[in-house]
Length: 133
Ligand code: 5GP
Ligand code: ZN
Image (cartoon, rainbow, N blue to C red):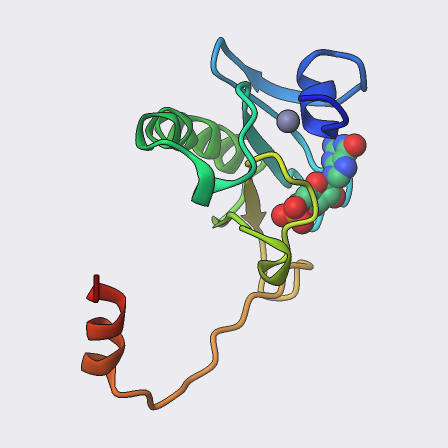
């Protein structure tokens, strides 16, 4: 897609540091390197984000994740990994071509901060809202 930075990376018009490539996906190092080895996995076919993907496109993308994730964890000597996928600006998406962040983890203070906060919503009411037509 025109003016999409990740499409340009896939086409080789913008350089990237590749860690995996096949016919369907490209994985390359994120410029920020939140932790060492922070990688983005992107489908070669452009889509805005997961919310806009057809189920088979999403299935193809996510089918590649375990192999790439394990390669990073093993060869970077990481102790674990956060897998993060941002959809729309409110959720932190800044590049509007679907991508999955693979963030290898080494220690609690290794650079990545992810935090869940608690709320006492009525869980059944929330589930009912989600399941309304
Ligand atoms: P988002 O915030 O959309 O979930 O993540 C976009 C990510 O793309 C950011 O972490 C940012 O560092 C990364 N990024 C943006 N432009 C480039 C680029 O040109 N090359 C690489 N390797 N990463 C990029
Ligand atoms: Zn694109």
